[in-house]
Length: 286
Image (cartoon, rainbow, N blue to C red; front, side):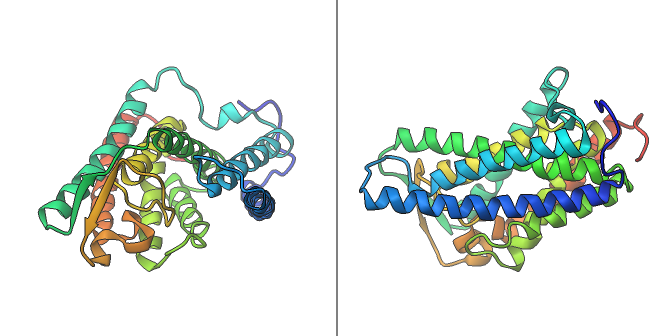
């Protein structure tokens, strides 16, 4: 809930300022991460945690600080007001988590039936799986807070909720463009992912559906099924034997660059939008 009027009245300007600060902080945290990793490698520090994990956790902390400062001193509101209300959204959390699992499962089954990917076990790295879970939780939390909680929330104060959702999804895709293996299909799929992740938010103004969907999708496709997650390779439970079918497997970027994902995300968006519109039909369009 707002405690007073924002310092910057125009919500589009607030979004623009936030994006600039967010990019600056990501670049700065990346530089700091590089220095830290160089020191660790120079000292030959032994760790079960892949070195790039440190960089991601540093970026998480830095991004959280940006959201807090912008909420506190520009918007003059609390972070909780962005959509972190826990009570009353149990079904959304469950549906969000199960949706990510089901979507990954459908794509995996199709790839298996087409004999493009086969899975086998080669020992389970429990530490890697737990660390991967913590990493995916951090990524899901901060990206939903940034792109849906702050950016989409502010855009909805200035434009129709559907237009705001579309613009926030474009921003979400553009800011993923520096990830390894990024291509046009990945851009399209991450744009669709931004729409799917935000479709509950435009009706409920609550982040937990998107956070749980984001978490389960990333965790199942990466640490469980062994695909790269937006170009990042993580410790995994299952190993893969796969054929050279980049259009279907996504290649170096992972499932988010697969045309199967394009189809699944598009259908999911239609189903979820229809379902949430019906559930929240009492809410007026912004």
